[in-house]
Length: 128
Ligand SMILES: [Cu+2]
Image (cartoon, rainbow, N blue to C red; front, side, top):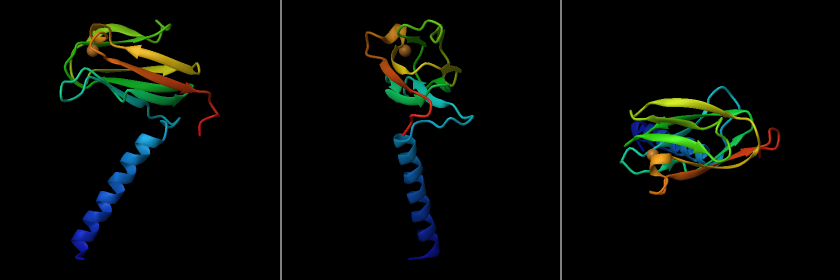
C-alpha cells in the first residue's frame, strides 16, 4: 500500500474512532459544553441528538441547526428553559443542568410535530 493510501486509511480510522467516542461517552466535565442542535441541516424538526447524557453541573450548548423558529422548554424547569424564539441557524445559548434526573424537553412551536427529546443528568461521580 502506498504511503498516501496508508495515511488516508489511518485518517479515516481515526475519524471513525472520534465519532464513535462522541456517541458512546457522555460529554466530559471539561470546559467544553455538550452540544444539542435544534432542527437538522436538512430541515427536519428534530433535536440532535434526541437523547443526551451529561453529568450534573455540566453545560449544554443549544444551537439552531436549521429551519426555525425554535425554543426550548424543559419539563418542570422554567429556569432552564429558553422561551424566546431563535430564528437564525447558528444562534445559540448555554444552560447548566445541576440536578440529576431525566428531563423531557421540547420545542414549543414544533412539539406537536414531534420535536421532543430527553436530557439525562447523571449524579457527578457516578458517570461510567
Ligand atoms: Cu422547533
